[in-house]
Every structure is written in C-alpha cells, then in structure tokens.
Length: 177
Ligand SMILES: C[S@@+](CC[C@H](N)C(=O)[O-])C[C@H]1O[C@@H](n2cnc3c(N)ncnc32)[C@H](O)[C@@H]1O
Image (tube, rainbow, N blue to C red; front, side, top):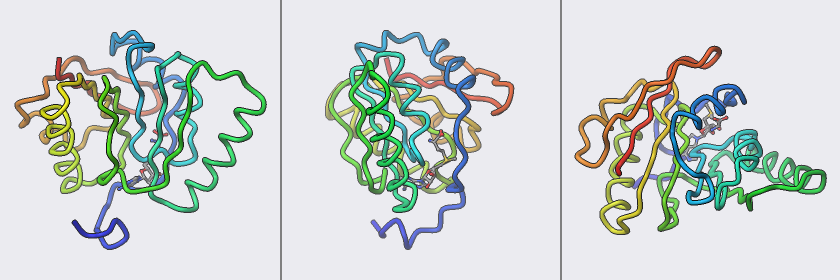
C-alpha cells in the first residue's frame, strides 16, 4: 500500500464535526457507550474525541495522519485532561488510519469525510476483515456519505438509519450486528 503522503485523497480537508451533530447521531446509534470503543477516523485537532469522552465510551481513540493536526490534538488533549475529568480514556494516534490496527472490541467508527472514493473502499475492506477476524460488532457513523455505496456493497454492513443534522448534512449509520 502506498504511503499516505503519496496517495491522492480528495476528502482530507479538516473540518470539525459540530457537537449538535455528534449528539444527534449518537442518540440514533442506540449503543450503550460503556460497552463500545469510539474511534474517530481522521480526528484532526481532536474536538470530537473530547465530546465523545463525555458519553462514557469504554475508550475514545482518534487517528490523524497530518503531523500538524496530530500535534495540535496532543496539546488539546493535555489541556483537556488538565482541566476536565474525562469519563473515558482518550488516545490520540498520529498515523494513517488505513494502516491502524483497530482494537478487537465493539467499535463505533466516526467517519466525517476523511477519504475519497478509492480510499473509503479500502477502509471498508479493512473493517470487513476486522469483523471477520474478531467477530466484534461495528457501527459506522458516516457523515456527508458521498461514497455510501462502498458500505451498501458490503455483505457485512446494513443501513440502520439516516440522520439529518442542521449544520452538517446527512449522516448514515451502518451496523454489522
Ligand atoms: C473533515 S476532517 C474530520 C475531522 C474529525 N473527524 C471531525 O469529525 O471533527 C477529516 C480529517 O481526516 C484526516 N485524514 C485524511 N486521510 C487520513 C488518513 N489516511 N489517516 C488519518 N487521517 C486522515 C484529515 O487530515 C482531516 O483531519
């Protein structure tokens, strides 16, 4: 697989999820956070992680490939933990989400425009392999779902619900279980 810096990826511009959109989507996902790990694929400066931690997920993880954004996320995490009592442990990973080894536990995957069509296809294949190897349930919140057909084609994923957010367009929730 080519290195992330060499890949053409039109979906990478940083734009943070609004707290309203996160709240609305998590409500529709119908998970008990304590039983699930939240992973933000392309976590930017970490805003979603800090809000997701307030729901009490088992763990909250963000993976970001931009060194600049990952460094800002680390600073934000240090500031957040110094001034807040987080309900969940938070981990910021600097790296390519397409190479990141997901933990073998039930996963809520947050996907807000990190990839263009080709890379989202590769990411869905990784999720399918993960599901086949671990049996762990996966829910995916795919905001601005420009390439939803990649999930629709998958035997592993089923559409659960479509959520309309005020400022952030639509979000499709897919489930394996
Ligand atoms: C639209 S922003 C979303 C930020 C955050 N997830 C949110 O919802 O607030 C997309 C992010 O994906 C990151 N990204 C793109 N390709 C990536 C990759 N292969 N691995 C990790 N992060 C990636 C970009 O650097 C950018 O920060």
